[in-house]
Length: 556
Ligand SMILES: NC(=O)C1=CN([C@@H]2O[C@H](COP(=O)(O)OP(=O)(O)OC[C@H]3O[C@@H](n4cnc5c(N)ncnc54)[C@H](O)[C@@H]3O)[C@@H](O)[C@H]2O)C=CC1
Ligand code: BAL
Image (cartoon, rainbow, N blue to C red):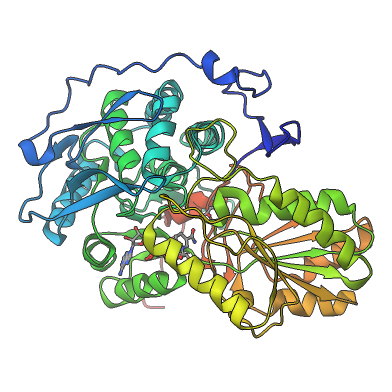
């Protein structure tokens, strides 16, 4: 997600200008980076300790030569600690080089339990109903300031662990995360119920939006910092406490952010971070009897498991942000150049590792050939490379397993008879790189058209009528995002009404804002993140019925 004004000034790539007001308002240029204050290693706050060498911090050197210290322990009760009962580790890899980065402690089911106890204790004592919204807001704003201060360092760490370009991590992922914290800090003292007069003389009901309690938050690897912020910010605003389980592929920035939780002054146990494997820590959180809510972003398969665990344990509240196979429709009246730019952004942003990736483009037959010609030229201009290069627009794929999944689908595309008009060839050398790949002449039954690939692989199909376009677009079990490009206002309204998706972009694609709700229909999810809607996910409504005048004549 990002807010942007974008131009095509760079000859060889997408040039993004950040719109959020936390950054200098000057255009992004190669000189821009040097205006960000030089990275320095902040002194580690004295308010937390690390126990044992198993949890000792490591120092990584980024490609820019910067030294970044990263905690490696589990973060429970504002301390970095080893596992209580396991020697298991998570080995972090740099996807640009395939070299190991470091090993960190992998939390066990017992560690999850300890973190839940810490979160429960905080909920009952220092947080939950024991802290004002003003104070929650103050701490959240402080955390946002610290993230803004450390944006460059966090971006470099995100690049090392996830592969995404430093520039994009800093200006969009982190920029929007800072804004997300501030947006929900604004809500923290405005979470109010209603006073409902039953009549005007004897009875009133009051509704209170109470914090739901201890929240398990399970996040993926495609936007490690941003998904952290989307989950943590509304939960804190509502007064919930948190056990965060980052993805085993990208746990480092969640650990680094845990340092900032301490520095901001959050009481122990309010935010706990337990890196762990999904089948261990994720499963333990979703089946835990003392977790009140689980929020998840990831695959539909895992979402289904989480919902099942929640149902079989304590019926905890569940919100799921799952997969997609989002359609993007281009009608003949559209500005084709703009539509092609948005379509390229839709499939190539974050190297296609995006739940809303516009991975199926359908073009009206009258403009099909022309559109593909423009789109291929735009996609070719994407600079795919190491994220430490300022010109890079798309980094490597996050992991070997994801890289191999993408190539399996590219092979399916070829063997099932789609025409590969761009990419589709492996690079030699190190790094999990996949260049933009476009298939045309696709049919609805092809695997590349049906399945979520989560890489820079686009299927382009053809339609002749609006009715056919809608039918093709909705022919999927998913319903996360959808786009349409047309200069006919009535058509825009008709088609956006007919598309089965949680978000419909008209004459744009993939832009999200912290004050606009986001989530899926069909098998793309349950619940909404962002905006005021996310507050409902972290509160429980209590109705207090109050009698101040009616006498009961008994028996009735
Ligand atoms: N909607 C989205 O934003 C994302 C979708 N995906 C899709 O999922 C595919 C597979 O990627 P994965 O990393 O395997 O996704 P995943 O859904 O398995 O992983 C996401 C998170 O869920 C956790 N998890 C895994 N198994 C769990 C379980 N049994 N109980 C609780 N938590 C569990 C993982 O540790 C991670 O933190 C991708 O190729 C992509 O298609 C992946 C990441 C994000
Ligand atoms: N595109 C929004 C977040 C996600 O991909 O998970």
